[in-house]
Image 1 (cartoon, one colour):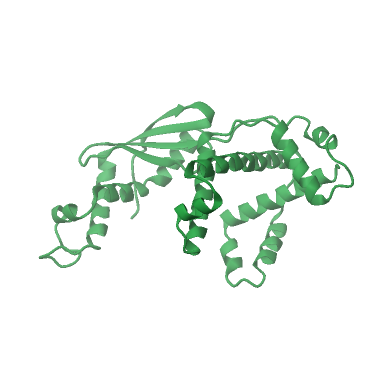
Image 2 (spheres, helix red, strand yellow; image 1 turned 90 degrees about the vertical axis):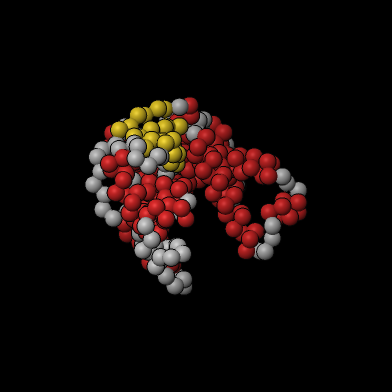
Length: 280
């Protein structure tokens, strides 16, 4: 369905540690057509006694379908508008995909929606080269040098990481863990008992790991910008081909703008690490 909607009214509120909230008002005249379209789509999926599938009146469909599902699907049509408003009107560069909270969504009335995201923190690198020169010894292996460098950078370059960014990374790690546990046919409770952890201690451990991982990514990225480290398209393509060797369909999967950007960032950070290792 193609949307032609009025520009939503929105109010920006910035909170501690980079958290950003944008509250939107969506006019019912813009919501109504999408809302009814979603109702028809959902109605086509359910069987209502006395009616052919997809032919039941909207009133009967509403009785069978969860209102929250209809609201969620309706709002999904507006997500690109929300993000465009955040970036273009409020000049915010979201570090994570905005979370959408429904404040008011009543049929026949204007809707109020809140988008919550965060911005990447500003920080100073300082004389990171001198820090590394003071730490290393020539006899260390490359892996040892890399660990010394990363630990030195994290300990000496202070970054106030947004809580939302940490939470997002922790949730990703927990999701990956749950997926691995399920593939092994285990339950999370049994796994935690085996490793001697509670949900609280596991989350705390992941928070510590997330802070360090995010700090490293931000620091290496800023060094790459400072030193004008760039991975060109040819280098990215070669890396994708190498990573895809012997894996059917992998090259096609990686050959998207989003995945190429990830590969480019990895290559640039690798170049930065190699230059820092060379200082020791």
